[in-house]
Image 1: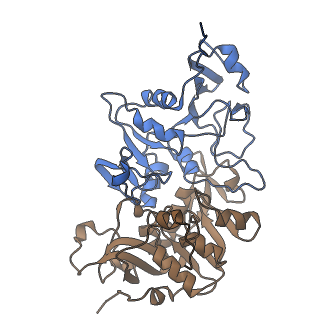
Image 2: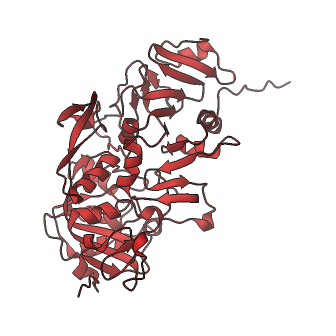
Image 3: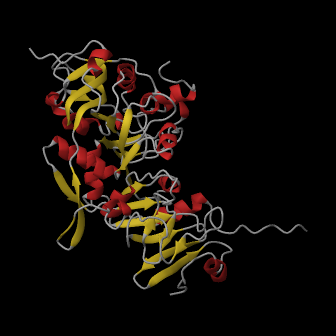
Length: 219
Length: 237
């Protein structure tokens, strides 16, 4: 009998679904570029979430079929999207009035690093030859009350991303509420990082080995 | 009689001088006034400071303007995108300046500039390297940094419809920076897909009132930047 390799952790879609489950009905939600975009695919039954994309659309809908693409109807990642019935378009100053003015309820962002205190770094490695690109990330962390982070637990090279202090330049300080990774869901609290749920075939030893902060389990 | 309609792109772009600050609308390709940018390349004005969210892609539009060495400094929020190589290469070589501004701060600086507000406070960038050197102040226990309003000599904007007064409508997310840039420049030039009779745009739905616009030129079949990039075209052709 051939032994099957056990799948460890959640894939990107499963991670996105975990995030969606934690967003309450009726929320206005901004999704960052990359894995956060997948969250839009998983609105739990019976809930209505309104997605804002900071380039100027409230009520962002599904990805269109190729033949229905409109190059002037795009999301923050410059990918073609659609507008739902009841959507609205607006200019950038109004868009960031929604964001900085505290009108958006939840924002889901990607991360390069997250610290024990909920600091987020996601715009630059700070390397001398890097081209820094910040986009709207700092406005979102400054203005949206709930910041959820969705990210692989470690980098492709195996470098730790959840660490005591971010070594990359910060996007925002003490702003992350929960970290959703391929291995676990981790809540950031004043006295540390609390593991709320672990992915299939992940145990506390495996998780702790891949985390630069002493995690709290089973509380 | 007021008639802001201009017949040639060369005439439209003649307001740009060496050393001008030019705001260019668009979020990537959406809303980028590519025919006006190409006219600016033909025009040849140098030492420009360009305010635009990105730095263009491929070798057309804004990327071609930068490649033609007409831009001394970029003020933008996201200077790298898929297919953008021109700006990163010049920046890495130290041959172009960059003022990196968070996207919402960029928008508000333009809005403030257009509204006659010289500076404002925002919480965006507090506790990050982008706040370094900025005046900080605490209001109601929260820290903010001061940011300056931005104005320009010329704004280049793309719209969907316009009339001879300069009233504008936009299309979908191509609106992005257009309405605020129109307010912040001494001379706002708009390329529009369709010029309509005055009165044909319902006053209730005008997005940019004509007072903010100086010139309108009809380009009824504008190029799609992504198609030019996919075809690996370079401007000048």
